[in-house]
Length: 240
Image (cartoon, rainbow, N blue to C red; front, side, top):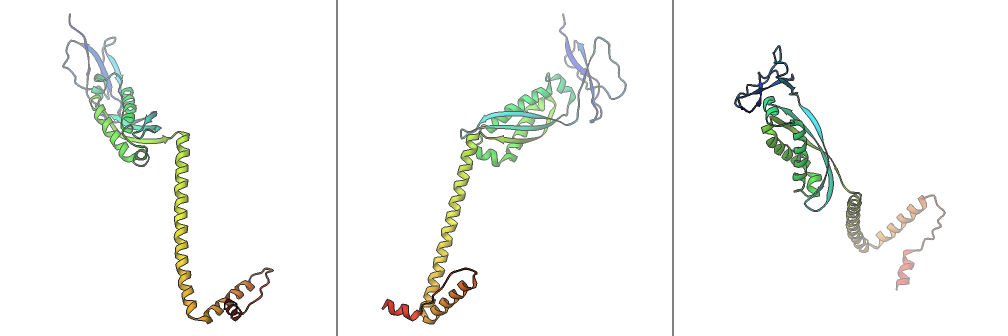
């Protein structure tokens, strides 16, 4: 007795329409002539089986995947995949369900690729990761008549403890930079004060002018401060 085999007959239609596959039991294993439609076509009732395939670009979300990165950090990552069927015949004959198979392969590929990356690479190099994932998916789905057009990483979620650690590390780094900037400012101010003191030391009258300028600035403010000027010469006598 001959073994029954299913095959698709017909011709491929306009890319934006949904072609119809007619599956008919046959004794031949080599006949595979394409898809039916659009237009009028005939089928054998109770013998032929019609399968309708959408050739437009469709999308699906990759569920959040718990991934252990190369530096032993657990993250949850999800993505979105854009794909289309470029060969409706082999998408029916080579795989049972091309959409479900593509979704499962996308989830596995996402875990495999991100498992080789560090947390810093995942956070800063999403574009290259998405391109690498798109390339791997396209190679894996090509025998199914599926073309993966684009893959995008949607969100990277870290554990709460890791978020707190990263926030503390960032705050410590900001405080360290602030202290360094303050120390550099103090150093520059000390040099300027030393230069000013050297200049004033060369001319005694400059110190007295500076003293009068300070008194003027104090008296200009609206306060209750009482200033008792002391002659510079008196200070000189006290030092002697």
